[in-house]
Length: 467
Image (cartoon, rainbow, N blue to C red; front, side, top):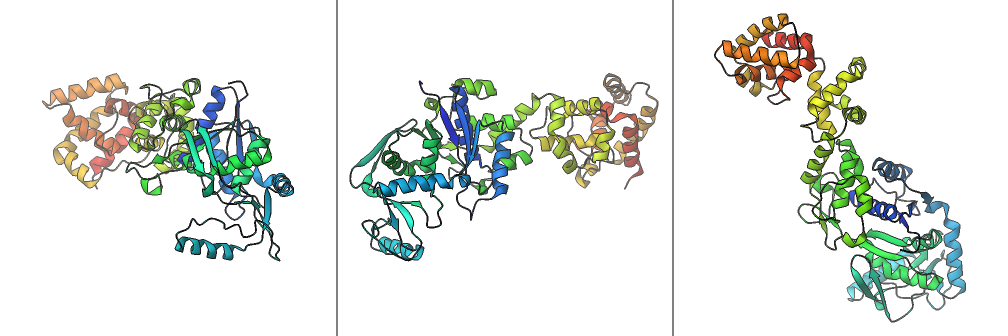
């Protein structure tokens, strides 16, 4: 590829960073990094009624969390003069014209066209000559007749009949540009070489190609990504669960898992499922992006998240867990009292079973102070009188055991069970419920060492005292 690649991600700041938008940003970023090119972030905020600073901040925060750093940054709202200059140029060259039609008039004509079975496009009323007292919009004078075709890097040749295109608005009467006009002006001035975006923009492409031709600039190459569908194969939406990057972050997903999963959501490299970031940059090409819609599988993403959590160093997991401790019921003061090495041991003990950071913090809650009360059903099943009697005897012996470490505790409990002619599980499971309030945990001997003698004895005493 001879020219230097320059791509852009251009979101409208009207909400959080959606999964679909995140994938588009990722594919642009990977394409740029693969070719040693530039990745531009452009906030398309020319709709003041819908654009918010909060949304712009959330989008940038989401991209940063995913590690998709940008090389240049622009806001369309700061570039209004440029759009106005290019619109004036088209007016002077007779390639655009003023339109005085009001929104109410346009809507009335649209309804009439639909009722008559005609395409609801602009009827060209102001095309040849118009005067009016209303504020004027500027419309593009669409060339009549012909066909617009282009070679899409994913779909191959795509063609549109020009008769389907109308004289669309370039500048609204308030002076703000429409999407199709602003995006072309910006892509020209920012020297964008490849436009990689969702299939929902495919119908915009012929209009934009006509604008490139009218302005006298060669168009970039286009690549339209297939849609993302929910498990029921309808368009991914909130009814399928979390759909924003922020939501997954709050649920305890790690950014590496999101990036890996989104990369594979429509792109493949053999049968490989797990990729490092370096591998994604090395292998990513548009030729490997499929044409058919990709199906979002939450269970696969959850598995992948657990995979990354298991392979993350406890020291790093501790940093990632900071927002989740309080939600899990661990007080900040209690955390600050703990030694970092002890906290890392706790994380190491629970990370093998956790699929999210939220789950990891919730499971590790048992290692901190306070009683762990089992639910009534669990209590009835495991803390019956016979089991409580054994726990009473066990507690007395635990007070005197000299070494409260995993190997010693395991040997002690096995001997305790053997001396009474019972299976290990018959004492280990009631002990687990008494110490953790749960029927499932990491090996109970390791849990006891982490809890320490004092907390183990306190929790056993709470069970022995009864309700």
